[in-house]
Image (tube, rainbow over all chains, first blue to last red):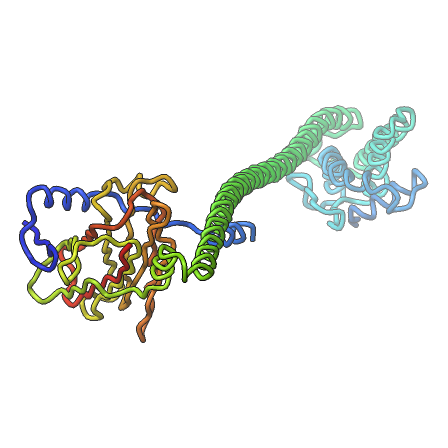
Length: 48
Length: 423
């Protein structure tokens, strides 16, 4: 069972909290946002 | 005694009024002609030798070159053999009359040589006792047979030479054809390679064009979003400025304006401070009240997270994620864009670095469009970012939930400070 610091107090997670935590761990990594500047840089690189 | 083939050829050429080198073709065939007639004249030569008591030849000479000296008597080398050659030259030139004329001269010369034998012979016992007596008639008969035999041999030799020449020509033609085939094969292969390279180049160009088009579309979309965000920010700033101006102008008479002004200018206060100690092994942190025990009801939040320099190996990546008010845990929808229903911020630590970001409720939405990276003396956090999907409807922030991602626990020494401002 994982531990959670709840308002400064450390305790074991409840089953619901543990389930949520485990679900979060299996969630996919969000793709990083691509800025317009990065896209333009990529475009320039392609056109070289 | 004895003349070379060249001397005989010279005599023969004179008979047809040509220079020695005028007819190279005739000269080339003279060797073959002479070999034929040397055989034909063998009997006559031996008759001369017999009449002079010389050793007879067992076979006719065979010459390979016109420079070879022919060991025949002049009666044959200065008359019969030149006549024979001339007869062949005319025959080659299709002048049958002249050919026949010199053929007769040739036969007469042989006969004359044979007559000389008849005149010079001594009728000794051996001759009179049954040795064959050579007469012009018998010589002619023998010569006729020899002529036919040697003509056949000459024809066979000519056929052999022609066959050899044809074989050489065929070999040359085959070599040329093979060379041409190889050239064509190389050309075809080169053309195929060129076509393949052109196809690949065209494919690559098409891919680049499509990639460029996609990038251009993305850039345009991002630019439009950025423009919209900038416009919203400008509107918000304008509104805030108007509110402040309004409050300042009415602060003595409007208590509400005093409150607005106070909120806008209030300094963020440190409400929560957490440090992860050794052995605590904490995987998540939840905060619903500040360290003074007051329930959170914040409109502005600023969070600072510092991960210890020695807590992770260099270039390890740790993520500390944030969720507000237990709103949706659906990461995909939170990332999807403007109308997402939750906020998930990710702090990515590459090397020794701190990160901080702030959240502000604004017209019922929590926004987090600013993120700061704090630098240490060694390096910076290069992948720190707050993702889109930062708008969802809350009147205030009442719960903050932090958890690690990709790690088992918060690194020992991690410091989390939460600053806030109440409504």
